[in-house]
Image (tube, rainbow, N blue to C red):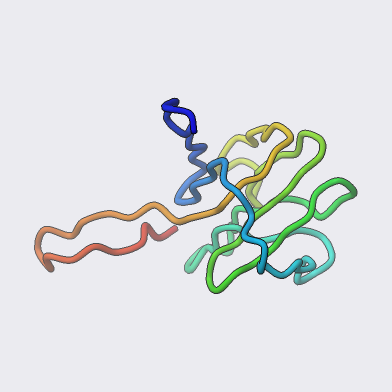
Length: 113
């Protein structure tokens, strides 16, 4: 096992990092046959997405989503001018949501868009 820290790609509230796909994860299809939503925009509809295309497969175990891409792909927003697209090199990845601490409510919550 490497001591090298895992690089985290941040795209808005979406977090993308290299990971292994669990053996019992189930392959999933894009919900609209166009893209996979990796971070849902609760207020503006500006979802963070990865296009459904050859060489990019998505898997899910519980509430966690994974991706295996055999060629570079991009994470982008539905509304293009909100965030720059970021290229993700070929590999296996796990997706998460950034969290923030609310000092007034004294709790941890997902970052919202």
